Image (cartoon, rainbow, N blue to C red; front, side, top):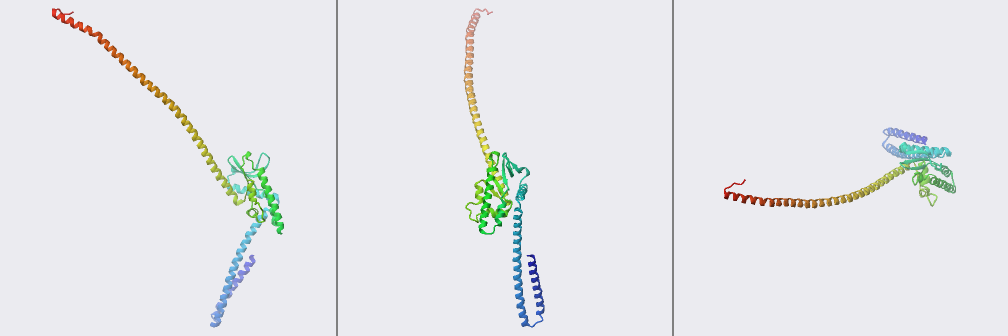
Length: 331
């Protein structure tokens, strides 16, 4: 491809040099010959423009071929022997998790009580999210190698069955709510090309149930490098909303308890107020009665003392009158 571009470039440069040479000779020729040569030069210029456009198209197609070659290399690196392929998937998954999350929020090679080991888990406080990276790429490789349409259909069905089997294993082994896992798990496909060809375009052979639908029905979500982060972000936001709802419930429960305490306090306050009111009324009535009694007793004593001293005063006044009449002073 590079050699072809160089050849076209040399041809274009030669045409330009020839045009300049003809233009220089043009000034020495008669006018009728000059007109003919001018037309020839214009035609040559147009041909050069067409050639440049063709070179641009060739360059664009070359870039596309280069991108396609990178995609082929990516798939080829994933279609290595099973052990190497599994290691590649786990390494890519660990790299993505380390870029997205703090080290304490994920763990590689997490073991369950049953002895089953999942490739990775993401920790969300008290819950964990299992992620499996053992995508059946061997079946996908065989599907790519099939040539006839019939063989492609057969290989695709085998590939679909392999993916569904892995989905069943994930659902059975790694979704363990009793061990504080989420009610679902993730299947990680370490290649965008494989994800698109095998998952997004899985209805090209007329399958009734797509792999995505089957996996979702079994609570397994298939993700690629570009869709893993949105899934995790969605889960994080969902957990935040769930915690807000839980906090709101706790606040409402505490408000309910506070209302009950307030009602109990109000009842006790009313009882104490009633007792104080009764005591106040009794105090007022008893004090008034006693005050009236004391006042009455004092009045009685004053009247009695007055009554007792009145006769003595009368006798003294009479004795004084008699003494003055006889001229004898009282002793």
